[in-house]
Amino acid sequence: MADSHNAPDKWDCLLKLLPPLTAFAAKLFLQEGISARDDILPATGKSPRGLAFDVLTKFIEGGMSFRPRSPETYDKDLFNYLATAVFHDFVDLLRSHQYQKTEVIDPAKRGEGQETAVVLEELGGPGSEDGFYSLECAMLARKLLPLVEDEPDLKEVLEAILCFGVTKREEIAEVIEKTPQEVTYRKNRLRVRLASWHRKVHASRKVVSTHG
Amino acid sequence: MGKTHTDDPRDQHSSEILDAILGPSEDFLDEEHCQEFLLALGIDPTTLVSEFKEHLEERARHHHSTTGSVPNTIGGALRVIRGRLQSSSPMRISPNSHIDLLLSGRLMQGSASTFARAFRREGDDELCDEDQKLLDDLQIELEADDDRDGK
Image 1 (cartoon, chains in turn cyan, orange):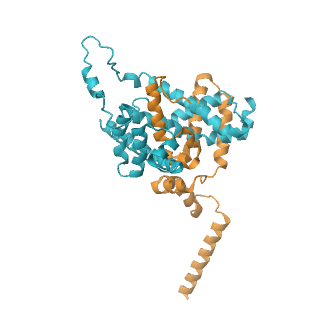
Image 2 (cartoon, chains in turn cyan, green):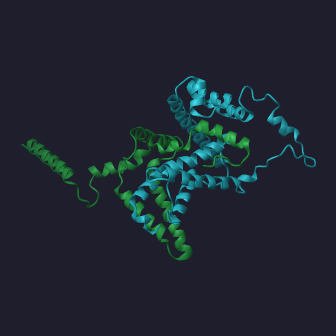
Image 3 (cartoon, chains in turn cyan, brown):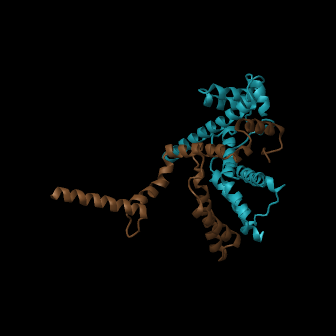
């Protein structure tokens, strides 16, 4: 602990992990933005950068105590260790009172005078998946497919995941009849594409709030 | 690493689907992919260390105002990071990301003044030998032209 400041390799590693950790936090925001009804994480006052910085600060304040599986896997293990902490903080953020203001109506519990028909109607009946793997996939498809309309190769990957429910690289490759490497290449592009979309959504929200 | 918000299998499946779309998190350990992703989100990866330093300085100020002292861990971290920032080169970035930054105009904000300093005299700052020689040569040439015109 006390000598951790005298170990430059640890510092090099920690500072090198700043971008990956920020990217991981950003991915959580993006993931929530895609899956949530809202396009962004509202009223949390936290940015991916802030989330990553807070975790690194706590790690430093705690004396940087960490035990990797082996010296060779130090970077990867530390990334996973810190990313887990970022994830937990993110979950806490989601549970925070400001974000939890969204009222969730449970159709199974019919309260006095509550109308659940609208909720059930929104969910759709059996078969509303429209050829997608699940209702969740159908909802994701409705949001994401228009974003890659002009890039058929990215659309193909998305459709493979959402229609067949395949999640592993090799499985996706089999469905689209391409190599796993090609899948990785397309997925990297897809991620960047969705990140750009998320950024635009954020920017438009800021404009709205400024004028509102 | 936890991928779900709850233990509900439906949430887990939806999280797996999103993970499949966005790729595994360990991909970010690849510098180029990581930079590309961050740039697409409008986050400049080259300024993260200095921003983190500012975050730690803020934390140190907070500790100082509440307890009257700054923990050794934070003080030590700041010393190390300031040292790294002084010795690091801003060009430790992949060529593709560098071009992205250049085209987006964000790189110029930081580097323009560096360029300007190399060619302009600022107050009483001494010029480097090469710049001084350039100026001296120009002055000699101009004086030579003046002499010729005078004749």
